[in-house]
Length: 317
Image (tube, rainbow, N blue to C red; front, side, top):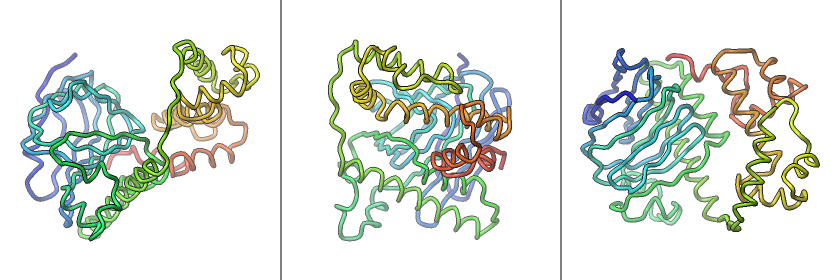
């Protein structure tokens, strides 16, 4: 694994929008910083490294805000946490890292596309007015306690991120547009966190054998996305009745076997379209859709944008 000092976030803490290009000896792309009039700071990372790289980052202040990872994978090791954690494609999250200084991350060679929104806790509280109870407790807890809460990027978030990456405005119009979309992203994230608070998940502890059977069934679903086994065949291979398979699948993956298959089909289609390997019709057939309209509807519902426009989010800005 390559080792290099990547950049200092001190350079991103000044004023004025900035673009930090990636050193051409290790990769291609850039890290852009946008400063909003509301005091919010947005960092858009879009780069690919030639090989997995251990990156050391110098940071002189605490980090509080929200992150959205559209592509790539990072293993982060922060002093405020005992164990490393993974940031990967499809994740949205809230983070609070008080007094964060030097830390290291292992960045994979897959293209990394990530949007981080930095906002002070005091600034966020201003939006709640006289009723901070409207915010999830994790956002208003002791700011000196490190915290990370992770969930998925919803279709609504995908749609807003797509609009951010494809904004054609310039100058003041662009600045105001981006700031409005950043506030919209924060709103979607808070709504997601409030929904979780109102409907907490109660996990049932499964045996190691049950978990192994479910993972085997999941592998069978992914083996051939174009011709997956039906539920009767899947139940037989897993050695479970249908009702138990559904129950255990929900406990392990948070969705039904069909929901899991749908998710994997969308992920595969997204990768094929992003890499420019095939067109929309070919992608639909490759992941098991015989109807292009059904594929378009499913893709748009999952990502918030139709497949014909999705590759634009990865085009150079």
